[in-house]
Amino acid sequence: MNEEINLLVDRKKSAEFGKRLAKRLRITAVVLLVFVIATALVLFVLRLQLPLESLKKEENGLVQQVSLTRNKTAKWLLLKEKTTEIGIILAKRPDTGGSINIMKDIMPASINVSTFNINEDTILISATSPSLTDVDIFLNNLIAMMEKKLLTKVTLNGLGVQEQRGLYVLSLTIHLP
Amino acid sequence: MNTQLPFGNFQSGTFRSAYITLYQKHKDLITPTAVIVVCILLLWFVIVPQINEYLNLQTQVENTRKKIATLRENLSFLTALPIGDVDEKLELTSDALPGEKDFQGIVEGIAIAAGRANVAVDDFSLSIGDLSATQAVARPFIQVTLNLRSGLNGTERFISEISKTFPLAQVETAQITTTTATVAIKFHYKVIPKVIFNEAVPIPRLNSKDLEVINRLKVWKNDFLNTSPSFVAPVGSSSSIASPSAQQ
Image 1 (spheres, rainbow over the protein chains, first blue to last red):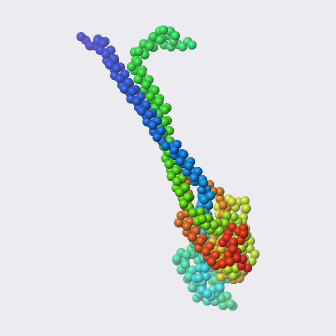
Image 2: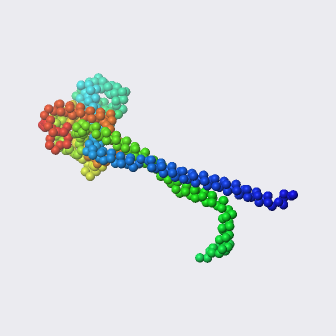
Image 3: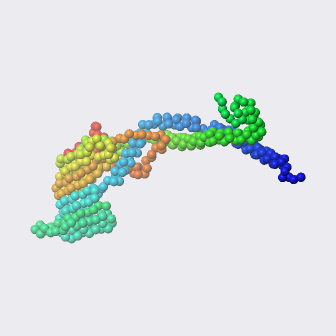
């Protein structure tokens, strides 16, 4: 018999394909259904286990207890703020008194200060001295301080002589760090 | 309603029997397909949002646990804090950094410092700037410019005494001649700020720098009290360090 004219074979093939497809669809449908149901159940159980309610209650209880100490808390926070502020002021404050003291220390006794102007950055000194040696000592002391980086710059604005009075006149600009 | 569909009207028997026949023929495919579609829709519209919600709840639980830990720590710290010690330190810092403009304290303190430095003070002026703006300035201060009848040595002693009387006083400028001096000094104060406390934030502790500041203030205060045996805090002055044993 010629198979090409056998119509039953084609029908059989398409029926088998349909059965296989139906079987696969059924399996997929069942698997998906089971997955959805299982996932929903697991999520439900997990949500039940979350202790959010009890944690919120505990949190509220602790907040109430802390609020009872608010006076102490306010004082402490104020103390912390003031201490921090004082620390900042002290750190940024220039030590004007200290700078004056240092200048006096390195200045030989014979040097007589006529004017002494000090601000945050600079010191302007006008002084006289009967001794050029003492003027030299003073200048050397200033140079030594510069080398130790205690001063950034020293400018000798002028050095003169008042012959009638027998005095050397000195004018300096000192730059503080 | 007459709806035109293939195989005739809905009401007609031909329609029904045609669709029923179709369903019967393909029900092995139609039913599982419908189940798959419904499952996919359930997954997308129900399961996925539920998972997101669960993850959000987990994050909330985690955050709440952290808050509780912080609250416990804050509570334990505050309970153990000795209030007497806090009051003492607060007084010390308030003396050094008053919470308001203390003109009386400043004037009296200048008189004390001048007396101890053995220096005469001429007229002086106080300037405070724009009164409305002081609250907004980060570090408000009162500037005092005073004239001393003194040379370099006396001015240096005066500045030293001022720093003992007012630990935070800042000498801005000094113009000194052989007989007179003009000194500009800043006296800091700090208006008490609004304290906003969030219980869920850890309470800041005093660090080593803060403790160092407090120790310095204690030393200053002790030195001031020791060298001023007749110290009496004036009524109404917020700066007990600057209070006089009025030396003329």
